Image 1 (tube, rainbow, N blue to C red):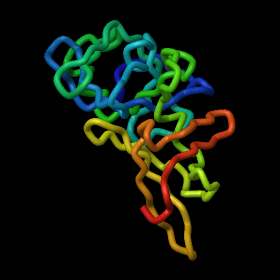
Image 2: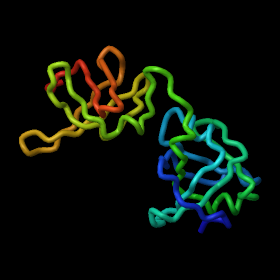
Image 3: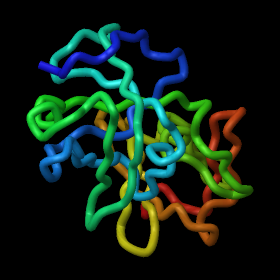
Image 4: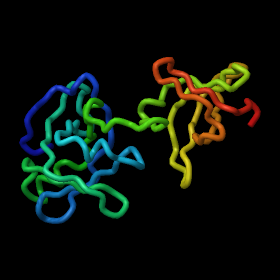
Length: 184
């Protein structure tokens, strides 16, 4: 059960960016596990929308964020609406959404992972390699995880998301062109 938070409708451009892991300390702070290795959206948005575990898709609550900062391997945050540890513990497991419009503007040749998921991937020869299902942070680089169907079977491919292999990302055209062969 979430503490007494203001009920709100999720914005049309809401993106899930993390979930609340647990309380942190005794003054109402809570730990957040971001879905991205670079969680700028959590820092730039001063209002988060929460959904309790198991809640229906249209049930959300607005949470005004006082402060969010990096701490070790997670993010910690505080809110005026969460006065103590008990209230913070009640948030455990809540999914965090922020409006896409509150994300910082990406620089040229920078992309939010959420924008890449679902894009088709083709190689220079025009062979379709699959659709981006997810991205993995694999240390020094990010890897695109593609799914495709060949000969009636689902297959998975992984393509490093680095400039030596990625020729072009066309977000409006929903297409990524890569220097990669189907048999890699």
